Length: 306
Image 1 (cartoon, rainbow, N blue to C red):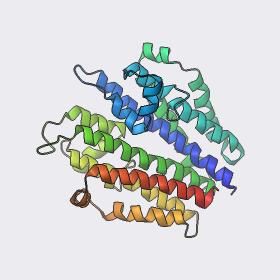
Image 2 (tube, one colour; image 1 turned 45 degrees about the vertical axis):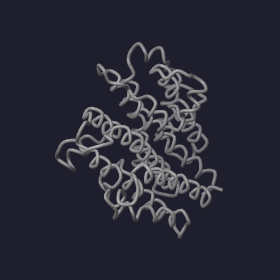
Image 3 (tube, rainbow, N blue to C red; image 1 turned 120 degrees about the vertical axis):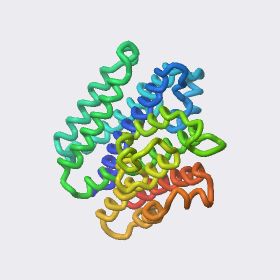
């Protein structure tokens, strides 16, 4: 496969996943803002996306309207939903002949409809319907990837893009939210706003999964454990690396990317939250994980796309 084709397909799925992850976090913050006396927490949302300084330079005041504009429609923000879908569609268009027709038509339709969506209209009607629409469109596209693509190299790069982005997104979300919501003193069950923990799980589609795995009330340490180590929750860091290892192995050979990914995967497969906290704060582990995953993405590009 041409390195350019691999690169385009990889970023096509990364950007689609990033758009979905963005609206999941936006939806959780928007829901929180609707509660009397509850703050939405827009600043952490910008921290997760890594766009705090860019937002402050352009908008200044941290209001819900400004953040929603920046994170949904701002063309200068590379992590806005608009920018992600534009990038995903452009990468898909570049490889239209390598993709099933249904896949291209799906992402092209999403992009066309996105161009006809305006902030003022969402402001009048509410944002939840839009958030659900983006999630549905991203999930449809991902479903078409699995059900329509030949399981060849192009398919493996599509899967790599999805799960490298998902691993990074889950780590960023957990890092910011866990640090803010966990009380600084006492047991982690005390002084917890259970609704906020519920919204954290909702943002990763994990409320039912948590009840299924733990069968009890919301406990921060168990939420962190599920998002990091669960091999059966689809948005956990462990499951994401399972998929990354599968795709890198299918691409054949002993690539440096496979060797690199195997290091982190081994710990996620055997480690526990207790193992982390014995040696360092959770924040340090997650920061290292985010950096590790960024380096892995660079190694994938070095091995296959340059």
